[in-house]
Length: 167
Image (cartoon, rainbow, N blue to C red; front, side, top):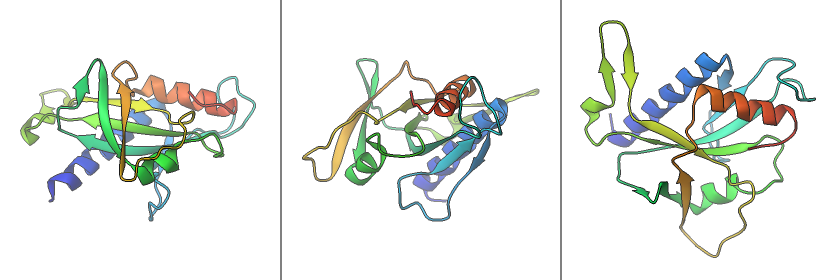
């Protein structure tokens, strides 16, 4: 398999594991023409929000490149993805998730006697309040290392979505 496809599949599996742990349903569209790779949904009344069955949408990116500087991932995002993910004029909150994996494929996963471990870490960013850019091909966005995507974070995103907000 092409190494980039392996990264895409690994990240999909990574976030699916988080969703399963959080008790969230997930789905994807056959055609990715709106920069959305995966959608998460909660069933019925959720948290303290007023909206039932909240949803969030996520663009997945995976890289083994050394992109960390000053406690952020300096991620070059294609302008189409940037424009699709930014702004507050969408019904469902949108997020960018960047998974950093080791350079060596053999280090992505560890098989142990009683568990497996997935490496390394996934981080998220909301582009909701980002404005237009004059860039033509890419925009480098800063994804804070402090914004780790976990099953708890997915719950928090869903809770905010049920209140009609996003993080």
